[in-house]
Image (cartoon, rainbow, N blue to C red; front, side, top):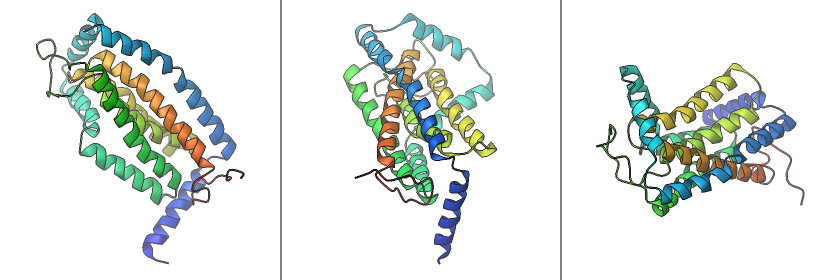
Length: 249
């Protein structure tokens, strides 16, 4: 047995030891899906408002309030939270997650993680072109770095929900209760929660852009999770880690 294969087997065994039983995984998946679906209808209403109303007073008020925080550590944190969402680091991080999941024996999870990186971004670009909302003007708010594409909805937020949200879902549904599971949930939860604030703070999005992205990103995450659950009993059913019973023919 080669050294690489030994490492892969050891990694798969470690993940398998941490995996929760199948009934627990199914219950957790159902709970998350039910929570996320609540956001679906609100996105259509917000999109209609954004398309028909040039700007909202609360957008400017929220941005000014957030940008009043001048602590250097907070500024650094906001820029650091946004950093993974830019190219090329977004591509590198997505590729690393896919490769790590595959090496851990989570083969189907790796495939769906790749979908989670591509699908929300494609949907985001499509909606941005359809709505055509300009970015915040530097004459109104502090813009740390000018971005030329459209503003609604935030691509960062949707990317984080697609990639980090799916990894959060995997940790929540697949792993047993442990410090490692808790740390993963907290880390990816913080990234998802704060990226919206960071996009407003750096002046590249309005609050309504961020809200729309959380709503639409939740919809795409639900679709990704549904696809994952649908394929879990069909593809890679004998994978080394977190296998499942194959779909009856």
